[in-house]
Image 1 (cartoon, helix red, strand yellow):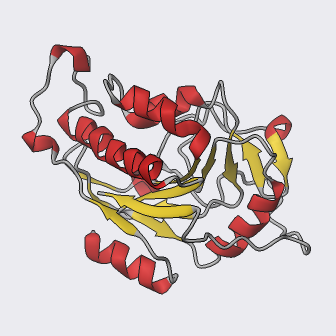
Image 2 (image 1 turned 180 degrees about the vertical axis):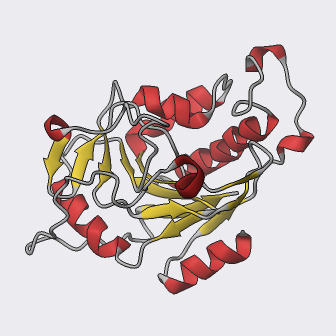
Length: 231
């Protein structure tokens, strides 16, 4: 998957910092970590600890925003164009911008509705899962870091709850799907699109995907944005 991600970065001309992952197989489970399950286990805990290094690095470098991508993220060919449009629709107060999310399986109970629509390419989230590609604003850093000091649930569950208290958004269409393959969390091959029926890109079938002609182009700068990948 590292080869996949490096190919993605080269294809889209993205400069990134690679975060070294903590292998869950080297972690000892403790009582304070909570109850073991298929999705909350040493692999998921290792993911949390790996994410923590990314947040600490962002704080130390004084970044305003960071784009964090898992190594199975697959960007769409038009991701930057769509991001530019969604970025221009973001309100002044925002905490996270998701490139994609799981709104619930098998029933999408957290699917954003018309009342959550901010603009042609932007909806507010209120309980969606997934974390394979998210832009995170510095306003979140201290909250995420505090949670990751003693995590007790999968990170995307924490983010799901976070969405209910702070303004988090998702683009329409989505900007990143997930590569099928072996999961280091549930320890088996997964294909979320085929097996779970998740459409990360056209997630709202009745949504308006028309681009705004006056969209302001957004190009992440090396000064304000760190693009990282968590394996």
